[in-house]
Image 1 (cartoon, rainbow, N blue to C red):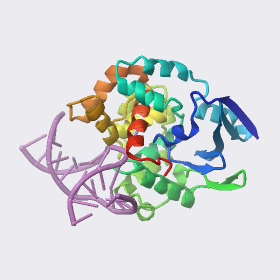
Image 2: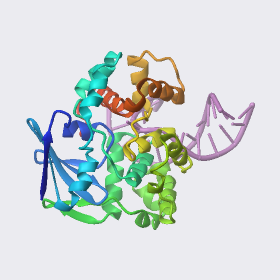
Image 3: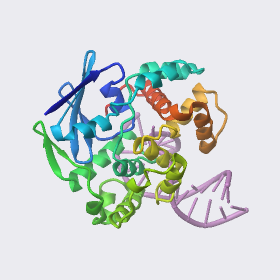
Image 4: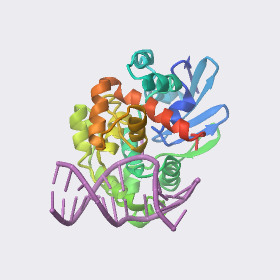
Length: 283
DNA sequence: TACCAGGCGCGCG
DNA sequence: CGCGCGCATGGT
């Protein structure tokens, strides 16, 4: 077993997991089990330290997944020097948030499910999807299920996805699985510019601008991206005194302001706003 | 009971 | 183009 140890200054495990970017994790001992594709890691904070435990073979995978080689001090420095008080404030609260490098296919499926939905229910749907179609695995004696392969999902009917609770998104997921199974590759788009990558994602049935923004940010680490959902709309209205209604224009406003820091600042803001409304985000 | 959640497709003008 | 509507589900 590999144990990766780093400073907790820019890595708060709980905040990173509950800030809405990932839906597959659960509390375990002093921290959380975190799942990605078919892999699992145990992550926790212990005072000054943040610790990740995983299989030796998965060390590189989780080093990348938790974005450990990035300089978060400079992201935070930019936030601290922002002209907007709400950026400073939210960055202080979410100082330990990192943007994870999720598997792009898993991020795509997850954020298609996320539309017009709430986080606890999104987690439940994904958990049931993994439970019924994912490979059964174990880590530290804890049972978990891999994220299902596209092939496995492609073999299921619409009725199955309805029973899983996907509602009107059932066909989005089924058709996406079929298209990947037939050769569509997200990974092959990874060299495109953010703008072109986003345009390709928008061609997918069930993917609109919000989901596309989440996928480029969380599945491709394009930080020049700023997903606008209902929470961010509230932040815009209440904390930026914004008057625009069109989400596309709100998105342009923030991208213009924050450029390459947009994605990080968006997570600070999203986490901060939800924290004020809901006291427990681990559900 | 109506409204809301990390919205999107579709038809209409 | 932009706009309004319907959409599955479960929680307040």
